[in-house]
Image (cartoon, rainbow, N blue to C red; front, side):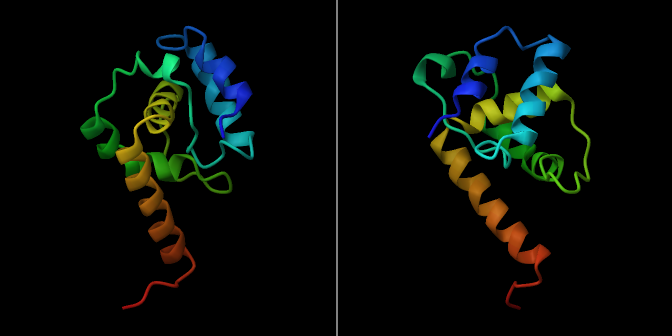
Length: 115
């Protein structure tokens, strides 16, 4: 399911625009559909993704920490957060890998990892 508000925000000229990037990040952190940084977007928006899978995956740990609503432990720029959310919205491979990282991290945080 795609979040209509996020779609509207990502249809703006947000790259290189701190104000627009901040709006996207504020939305991601407050929306129940987007709060964990995993969203789905339409094909029309994905054509302009400058982030490669390798670049996206290298930022997963920081992105995970930065998107924790209760206790963000890492600071990322709003544009970096928006770029990763944008890439994860349409790249099935990165999306799946990030979901696995989230699941493992949440198990570890609850001390439910088996030795």
